[in-house]
Image (cartoon, rainbow, N blue to C red; front, side):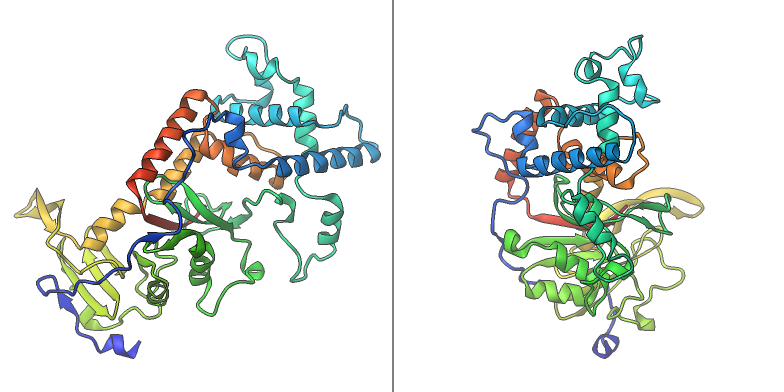
Length: 414
């Protein structure tokens, strides 16, 4: 840190060095891949995410849970859940994400505008509700063992949603919706394809946090280096970005760029590094410490960036409205390279969220561990359930493979 404080702040007119980036050598073809020579059906695509073993486990645990409820003198009609019934149940869940109605019971009504042939002809409403009521992902005996560990470090907060690993509720004060499901997500910048994610279960349960904090350890946990290979470009938001992270990723042949909080440890803290109070749009200050570039740029507000990818400036411009002589005019103002590429590549997780939003299941359940698999399961996230969209998906994946996309983005998502 002392070395960074002693460095001189530089201006847009001063020349920066050109970094020699690691050679892009992926361990596999970048992005989602699918064999276009195979005759894929919706079910076979589904099995890429839900294996037959997982399906069988959920069916067995659901049947055991229904038997426990009946043994507890709860009166309801139940027949053992079969593989066929489970797939019909899931297809109804997907249908509910595509066709929205005010109440779940409306899907079984016979009068217009709710006279849907599906799901009414595929499964009775009572059967669907019985499965929903009895649905259980985890093993009952293991539930009891885990419950005895409550209030101890060995207690697993996510046990109820295993084998399907999804969300846990969390409070985030800076989000418009304060209570949500906090995921740390690594996504392909071009397609929104989710490479990896994990659930934040709270400070007390964060056993893997390193000495550098959660923002550092979460990146290292999410990056499947053996699967990715080297030479990828990682874009991060300001929760993750730190000079220490960028240095350590560069040693692993991963380059990184992201917005950064100015109070982050290692960020230069000198008066000379600050933009003037009356800074104009396009004003910039930069500083370099080894491989790490620090940039401050004035747009509508000040933006701070760190990068091991870019030069400070190569003469790029962006159109902005600027007030001159009392009149607003559109002008080209200077913009750092890292800002341009960050804006171009940071939308992968937003795209992933948008894809989920098209097929989300809005109907609530009383048990959070029943709702989260329906909300975050790979099926609604990836597929529409129609042959036309599945064919489009296959061709889209092949194009991605040929284009060799190699940028990733990482966000703390809710």
